[in-house]
Image (cartoon, rainbow, N blue to C red; front, side, top):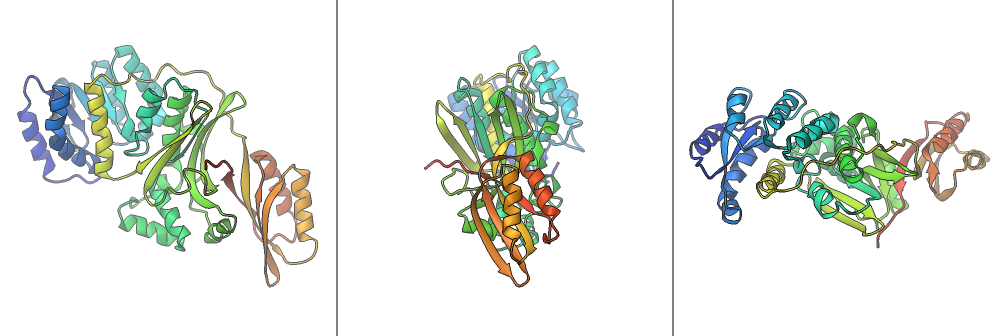
Length: 425
C-alpha cells in the first residue's frame, strides 16, 4: 500500500457517522494513493449518484494498517472496496466478504491474476458481484466493454499497452533519452515507483493480460501462464533503426486465438504507424480488441494515478448499485500455446568484410526466415545488419540466430524484437 494521506481517515469516519438507513454503505480496505483519492471522489460524486440511482453511497468504515476492524467493517457494509494491494491479507478479506454475501470491488491485478478463479467461483456460488475495472488499464473501461458490450462477440485478439510507466519510458527514449534517464524522469513525474521492477520487467502488464485473456476467451489464465519480457535490455540504437523502417516501440501485451489454442504474452513490440496503438504516448494506456464481426475497436486513456484509478473504482461501485454484470462464467478448457508466428526486428553486429551478409542470409533462409527490409551500416572494421522479417515461428528464428551467433565474425549476441505487421488505416 502506498503512503497514506494524513487527514482523510478522520474525514472517512465523519462520512461513516452520517450514513442513513437508505444509504449504500461502502467499506474501504486500504487508504494509500488510490484509497485516499477514492474517499474524496466518493464524497464529491455522492449527490449526483443519489440523484440517478436513488441511493447515496457513503463510506461506512475504513481499514488501514493502524486503524479499523475488518469484522466491524464487513458487518456494516453493503459492499467492500479493496485497495490494499498484495496477495495477503487481501485474498483472505475478499473471500470472507464474498462468503458473507457481500459484493466486492477490487483494483488488485496481482491478486486477480493469481487467485482470480478462486474468487470468481466463490462469487458465483454466493450469488454476489466481483468487479475489477480498475485492475486493468486504469480509467480505460475495457473490462466493462468485454463483460457487457462485447459479451456475445467472438474475440480473436487483444493487443494492449497496459502499463503507463513503461509507455512513458519508451516515449522518452524515442525522443533520445537513455533508459536510465527516462526511468529517472518517470520517477520524478510520479509515473514510476521507487522500485519499478514489476513495471519495467513486464510482470505488471502480464498480470493485466492474464485478466483480459480470462474475460475475452474464458480460459483460466494464471499469471504464471503468461510469457513476459520487459524493457530494461533495450538499446537506444534499436529505436533509431526502427525509425528507418517506419516503426515505433511499445511494450505490448497480446492475447489471441492460435490454431485452436490461446497465446498470451507481453513483449517489447515494434508497430507500423497505421496500428491503433502506435500513436499512444506518455503514461497513457490503450487496448485494441479485434474480431471478425467488428474488425477492431480501440479504447485509450490515462493508465495510472490516484484520481484516475479511483474513478474506475467508483464506476464499479455504481455498477454494483445499479445491478451490473456478474462474475465471469466458469472457465473453458483451452490449450495455451507458447510458440507463435510473428514478424521480427533483428540487430546483428559483425565484422565488416565480404561474405558476411551472404552467410547470415543463407542461415536465415535455411530456417525459413524471409527478410522484408534490411539496413547495413559500416563502422570501420565492424558492421551492423538490421533487418525486419516476415512472419516466422519464434522457435525457428531463435534456432537460426543461435546458428548465426556461432560464426566467428559475429561481435555480439544478435537481438530480436517482435513486430506487429497489422495496420488499420
